[in-house]
Length: 360
Image (cartoon, rainbow, N blue to C red; front, side):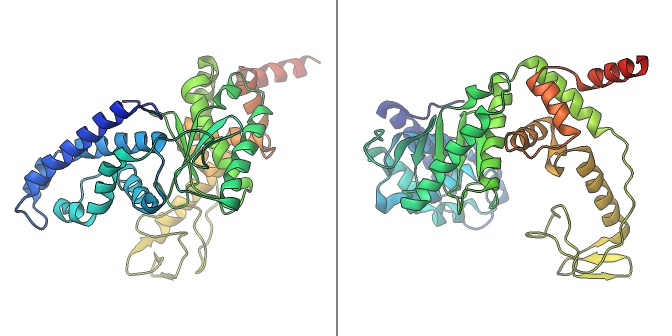
């Protein structure tokens, strides 16, 4: 379901009633239970409750002025529903622990409506309508404005067909509702950009915003023929044979990828008997880790960034951001221009070029 970012009071009331109804259903099922009850946990309509919370929180973000005294609890409630997907191990404890943010959502129905220009909670930054849901002020707020305006300027300089059409719509300034190192998100079902407050407006902030607007471009405005060419191009790069010599591992080496169960950047703490330790008692076989590193380095040579190898979507968004910021190098530069700007297959162009050179 796609919900408008700004909704009227009756729609908000309906969303709140639905959310509160699912909450009451869960409260009734949990009455008299304690601890982790696998049977109760399995039977709970948790997905419906969570989805109702997401839709209601989204509508509040776009429609209501958050009172200063409620900002912290509301931010927690937004993160609670938009950043949580699975049923908690102990639903009864979860409901009790989060009573205040849940009740904050229910009471939010009485908050005043947002009115553009009447406060710093709703304002324009270039082509975007910014919802300052954290109550940011001064320099913090100016950084958001500068980043959005800077990203819009960079995008206008790209020249891809239909790309300027992404420059519109709501931008939600929120707390950390996703991964801690993520600066911006785009949700296709809402067609809305979410951003966290920036410590500074640098290459990373602009890169992230352009990347997320790239998802909107793919989803709504990129010519289908160009997108089909890009997906085929991505698959060609993915299947390229690249040989990377194995490297010796040393204590202190940082890994170029995340490893499940290890927070932050994995750093080798010990190598012993063919086993590599990153802290704690868990280990990875040295031969397996070397294979992962080889595969990661091969991906880094096939694509402009390692993250680009994830999917055609992420590949395009990273490449678009690099091009917009003047950081895209060959051979990726020519391929991007051919496909995204000109709608041509670079492999065909290269064959034709070799043919004409051979005839000279």
